[in-house]
Image (cartoon, rainbow, N blue to C red; front, top):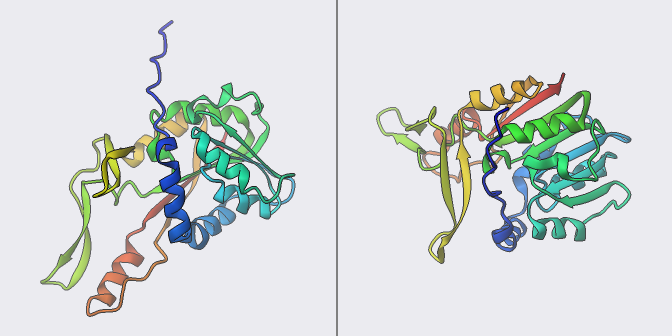
Length: 262
């Protein structure tokens, strides 16, 4: 039998946890409150009695929203600092619990029992993880048959770090999205403190859509619903407002893939 290749080190955000939390507090989690949490509520049953796993939960923003709806939520993140923040901000101690662990090794977290969750979510985090298959396999083991996994990510078709951008067509007076590469999978370091600390980076992993759908299917998680969500933020007023706002409404910022455990 072939020995599985060792996993690369986790690409967690523990080393930037304080900065990330300050940014979230300063800017306010507007995309979460206006787009993501309402979308999660539409696509998953998070009502009273449902047990939900939040993979790479960060500070617990989505966990708290699901717990408020009545679900019993377990959050997991590889960052000890972010888990500590989530525990400090816990609002529903009878329905929220948090554990530190690698999303690629969910089966090694003793508090997570096989087939004990009705649903699972992974929100704006999967593009910071590699490889995909161990995450899906662990999640499938923890989900009940027929349970759902909802993965929300920055849309990989339209947002490729360093390889995509907004452009203005002066002839047609329209804004469009330029995509330089798409099918090539890439590991891309992202500078977290441009200007002040250019040496502090996190990793993102661009993959085409087929990589997500096919690896989910290989783990017996079949995609049964796809949503594409736009940003709720309107552009500033100006002579290009109408054209820029149209591109905002036409080119989605987020991709939501819901799969069912079979």
